[in-house]
Length: 71
Image (cartoon, rainbow, N blue to C red; front, side, top):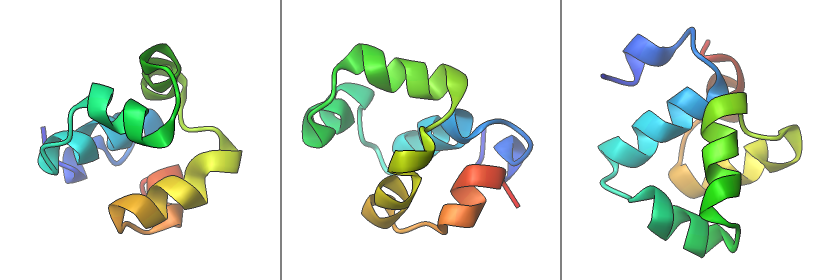
């Protein structure tokens, strides 16, 4: 699945694809963020918390609005 194919999905789906495209394992990303892998899995399922969107967008060099909305 490509980044463009998940535009309509939640921010968590876009994050999952971004990590895959960047060849970053979810476990490594969770460790880097100092969060549990379960919390990251929750983000994949429910979306990235608003309080973390800007931080994650900066870390992955993507537009925060796109990460949040897909648009």
